Length: 395
Image (cartoon, rainbow, N blue to C red; front, top):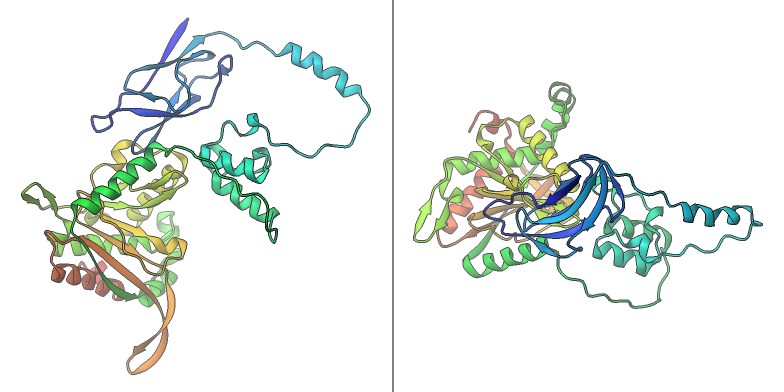
């Protein structure tokens, strides 16, 4: 029996999708619930599973094609069995009996890289890397561009010169959407950034003192992000204009802190939303962030995970950034930027001491947020992080 494979029902905010990767080809056997194809939308990559066991009979759209909700993209013949490559097996038999010869140098063929995304494929081909030799860290063990770069750097350290290859590839759907959002922010918001610095010595002492008990109690580690998320949620309650958004000639004040947390993936930056952070404890925040990070990197985020959000936190310090001006994510009105923690000389009680310091930045929409509001918000976060007991007491 032939069964049609259709594009899943897409939300109203997503008009269409692009076929990113076919994981099967015509004639391949498929198992029920096995992923057949990845569909890339503006926000997430959707997996389309097989509804039954059988054989992939027809693929109606190639990689890169744009498809819409409920459109038929493939056909499966249920109960069918893939034909065994008998001819190929016969042809291989004489070779096994032939005298052994020196093994040729490994060649990177088109078939070896055809399943890689464009950036990773280009890296594999130009660096002469066989993807089969690389341990993948992407979704379901897929080899990413970063995996190939790390592999190449280990084999070519100190080697210079060589060819100067180039390749033109189209932007992914997600990358195009990110570009559109950045330009929308630049063109529609009167953006300004204020800065401050935070002494994190008390946070680090608390983490060190409580880490073992925290893990035993909650089964998750106590990180820095939960301190910043909780401090931001508390400050948003006290400075509601930072948590507001512009809608035409109106200002919408949100009485809840739905915080978008920026997560970097090999396809681009995504911002899943932690809902009602003002009601969450530290363990719930850490669990939520860890879950979103894992889902983002494995392609498991849902569209609803990325929708909404009243405020964003991004941590460039993960990659070593010391200072930056993050860009506001419309229709939100502000974003908090975290940066690398560095020991710096500070004065405490008249003495110069080394302390773990971090620069923090607040970019905001100056149409509704005045400089005074932005500075007071940053000072509020600074005071909480330098006196973390204030957060536990709701002060």
